[in-house]
Image 1 (spheres, rainbow over the protein chains, first blue to last red):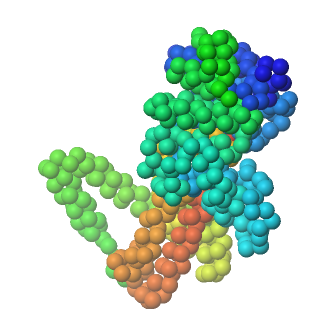
Image 2 (cartoon, one colour):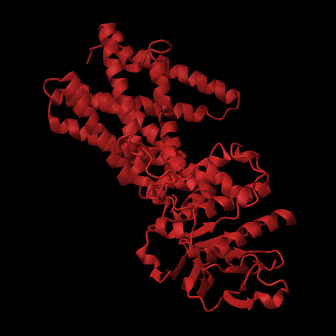
Length: 268
Length: 266
């Protein structure tokens, strides 16, 4: 796996947080690379800056700087939105706006950055119902639910959720009624359905019981099997799904091979 | 100046002031702690209104467009100052956008209401333009102050949601949109309530003034409607303009969320 060319590389990543008594350097000059289909665990004591590192990769961290490359192209060549479409950060807290689970999952497809994605119902009478101008104007103030339904019909959501072991979740339920484990899985499914090239999962299994944590882990292993590069922040003992474990401590990254630490090997 | 059918003499002012003093006294006895500021505000209001009366009287007699616009300019600057002092939790450097949105709204008001609907002679008729501007500013100032406070408050409340939206590829506008909509709605609420209740529950100030001064009540009603309609529409314009100009203060150039402590809140 180490021979694969990396899909994502980061160099000279630094993060400096302002504080009342001068700026505090969380880390500086870090380098990281990950190949297609690889799962890497990021561990380290709390406060060591693991989340800051992942948000820096997704260009979401206003305190961080660095040089990032995706498939050989530098981040400067992307708009922030296009970059985040390919390098997707998945926050620890599942936030599911909307009245139904289906609506929450469709949220990314209501955004302008995915307006040009090919529709599932190809060649539908998309622009016929409403003039382009009218649609443009109304898009400005509310998200285009109809277009999102064309891009991601209920059938496709259902199929993906079932494949991910989420057959216990009804699409018409209110997101508030989901349990913690269900919300975490839906949040993960939402990001996976956008098919990013790199997934940065920030302790998605925190606060879940072992069964749900295992489900989340196998969903990610499935996505990695289809070529997604995944970085996971974890506090749990190694589950054998990662090919490498990277430790962030005292502002430095150190790497250990996972196979040595765990007998099961990469579980795919 | 005695345009009114029934003028108010000095004793009238004394009676009004005495009423405030009694109310302040009662509130002191009840330990509500607002007596002092009530009295102080009443004195300020009396002085400000008398001063305004003299200024408007002077501008009307002078009949010079430059005086009209100078008066409006001073009112605009005062309005900016009031918006910025009333809006809570807003970053520094909003004076420019607030002034611009108030100015544009005011120019629209003069262009549409004065020149299109009323068509006075001369075109800058001070007794029309100055009070109209005052009424418009009174409304937009509170709408902007409420709208701005609500916007920044909402952005901080929705912090996790905004981070999630940005991570999913939302633009700054898409991430801020729910807060923008809710703040404009809140800013417009009093205006819409006034529109709905006027004529049944209340006789609005402008109409009441014309009726007391001996004008035809139906004419006064028509005038009031035009002014209310314009104020409602233009308050929406002012709120939308200020939001369009300021929502980006919550984001960095790279469309990252800029939390409250990075915004330089006053």
